[in-house]
Image 1 (cartoon, each protein chain N blue to C red):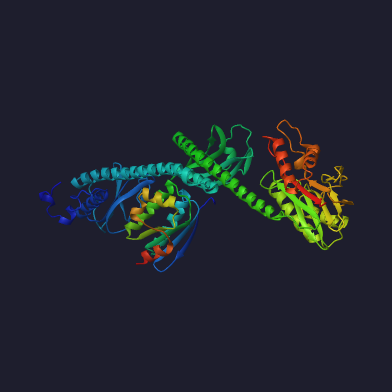
Image 2 (cartoon, rainbow over the protein chains, first blue to last red):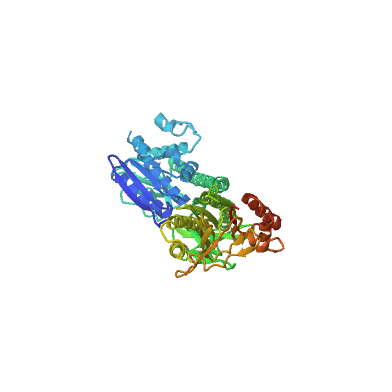
Amino acid sequence: MTESLKLTIDRRDGLAVIYTEGYINNQGGEEIARASYGLLDAGYKSVLLNLAGTKIVNSIGISILIEIIEKMLEINGRLAFCNLTPTIEKTFHIMGLAQYAGIFADEETAVRTLSQ
Amino acid sequence: MSPGPADRALEPAVWARFLPVPADDSGDLLFLEGLLELWCRSRETAGAALYVEGERGLERQAAFGSGTFPRRLARTTAGPGPEFERYDLSGGVLLVRPLPGARKASTTDSVDLLLAAGVRLARLRERWKREQFQANLKGVELDAVYEVGLAIASTLDLERLTEEILLRAVALLDARRGALYLLEDDEFRLVSTIGSAAHASFTDDGGAVTAAELLPDAQHPMVTPILVEGRRKGLLAVADKESRQGIGPFSSADERSLELFANQAAIALENARLHQEALEKERLERDLQLAAEIQRRILPKGTPEIPGFEIAGWNRSAREIGGDYYDFIPLADSQLGIVLGDVSGKGVPAALLVSTLHSAIRLLIDRLEFGPALFHQLNRHIVESSAPNKFVTLIVGRLEAATGRFGYVNAGHNPGLVLRADGTLERLPAGGVPVGLLPQASFLSQELTLEPGDLLCLYSDGITECTTLDDREFGEDGLIDVLRTTSGKTLQDIVDWIDGAVTDFAGDGPQGDDQTVVLIRRRG
């Protein structure tokens, strides 16, 4: 597993998908925050985080994801997650992220829901 | 709080912010926004925001009015920009954006008292959020330990399990990196790693292993052994505990958590290892059964009908797959090819060599001149197609039914016995080197003639070297005794006698080698 998180961003019509690969920890979380805030500044109000390439998230990473969710809520934006491992999905539910951000099994379902 | 005379001008919508008491903290946010609205309405202010101390500085808690307010403020007394006025309150900061030309606000009236209450509330709210986060995190920690415990019963895939254990340990402890080693053949081997280079393997000399040895790039490493029945079976290492400020050392509570995790992991890993061993054993047994079935099919189903002769063959393997093999090959002009071989070793490798030998003899016996030429070709084939330490002791003969002549080549096999009709016994001459042992071996063709009533007995050393528990051998004499005793009986009876004699002789001793007998008797 690589030291730092790798991100790929796919900008679509009104929706951006961020693909992660690696550990979402302090460094990884900050990378995601930077990318998300950049997308918000560019006018994207719906951001989907596809975590297919991520097997591990620690509490620092989660706290940063919560901040991103709060920021999205402030501007009536939407943040969603898809392709989570069962462990990460359970963690997100316990930590309360699932209350404010959509969690979807796959990207297709997530994009369809966010585009409505 | 109820609206007083001075507050009657306030719209009901403003008071609605203060009155409801929802179950969650959303009411707190409404309350804070209401306070800021009061501030803005009572002063010439376009917007205001309230900040309190958070984990990463002064965090914005609530905002009201127009304009954007930064999410965080520096702890210095300087404001974020000339368009703002900054009021440092006890435990917080009020940032306002005045209307153009407005006077600087006084901070001594009743609204300020409310603001002070607001700061306190905001700080409580921030603390509540942090505590809620920590409580949830505790839930995640318990879940992680519980899940690894559950994996003991559900996950038996060793590779998946080792990865899962390391992922959960690293996440649970907010480590930046980690590594998991398992003991294999007195060596700790790296089976999973996260976040940094780790040593691939090192010898277990029984001494203490420091975390720094495992994760040389780490600044704050920590390691705990994975113990099974008190013995070190693995090592779980993590390093560099993360916080929002960077990395630091682990606490003693973290150390206990890692130990607890390693205990759970030990049971899970041991179960997975035992399961893998059982699967491997099962697979091996299936392979052996399959190979045994193949070998059973190689052995003749019955005995050939040769005019003027009785023929019998018998084989009993020491294990499910043996190295002994015999064959009867009908040839032209009422001739019969007779084969008896003993391949070195046992199990699947021996069975493979038997199979190779069987095919080669069947292919070559008709195509080459019988005798040394056949054996040279067989020898070359076995040398080229088998491992260097594999060889076969082998007798291949050709019986001419019309004359009783039995021409044969013996390559290192036990010399056969001939019990003549008059009761005399002859030993066939000893043979040369086994097939497959030397690339340039030479072989000698020999011949005997079976007269009416003569019995030829070819056998493997599993018969004569059959031993008792106190290490006595059945020997060639034991076999000769049986042959003499049963001289007038059918060949099947003789085979049964040999079977019974060696079984009785061995008693409770294990069958150490395959046992094979081929009998040929010319009818009288």
